[in-house]
Amino acid sequence: MKKIFSAFLLLTFVFIFSQEKKPMFWQDIQNFKTLDQQSAPPDNAILLVGSSSFTKWKDVSEYFPGKTIINRGFGGSRLTDLNYYSEDLLNPYNPKQIIIYCGENDFADDAQLKADVVVDRFKTFYKKIRTKFPNIEVDYISIKYSPSRQNLWQQMKKANKKIAKFMKKEKNAEFIDITKVMNDANGNIRKDLFVEDLLHMTPEGYRLWTKVMSPYMK
Image (tube, rainbow, N blue to C red; front, side):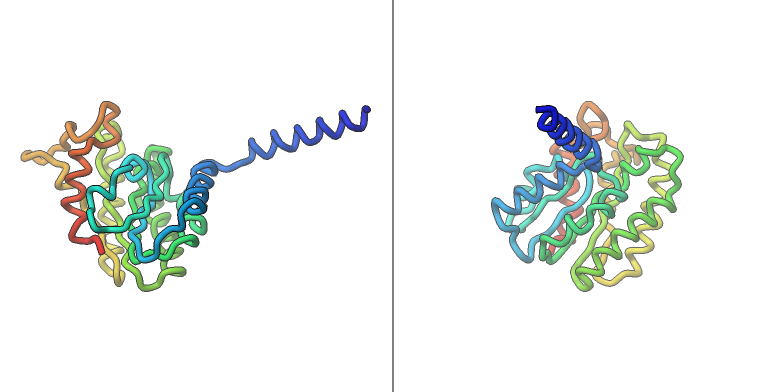
């Protein structure tokens, strides 16, 4: 009886320990795998990867009629997370285009983070994409200047500028700048494009993104 009880305790400990050791966003990735098992992802789709600005764009396909879109954004993710889960985010798919929105949370996670660090994280992920998909279109959406993160704008602007310069030199790559369309006539960020948290966007914000993104969509 003691041996059975000891074995039970050991199994319980192993289970609890394994749960605690699961990396951040592990469950989000499992959810993607479940979706892919339930319905095989289509080939030649446009793959969206990144953070909550994609995650919350649940009706993205309605903004781009006629386009086949796979949305694999997971809220709170940083470029470090895209790099960590790169195989899970890339291997199951055969897209004709990948569009990335990520980097904002990298700065929010560490207010002292320098732009060069975020740029290097993006370049690492970009190289991972190119290893698997050397010729497809790869686009990066500029980091938006959320009013709730105004203290981070300076480094965000530097990162946007450097990533834009990098993408300009790459083949089949574009930097999609959504910053200007989110400004008012005086060049100030339109707070009405954001929900109460001043971080995530309203449908009007996404409509403006659509206007800028459409010419780049394959």
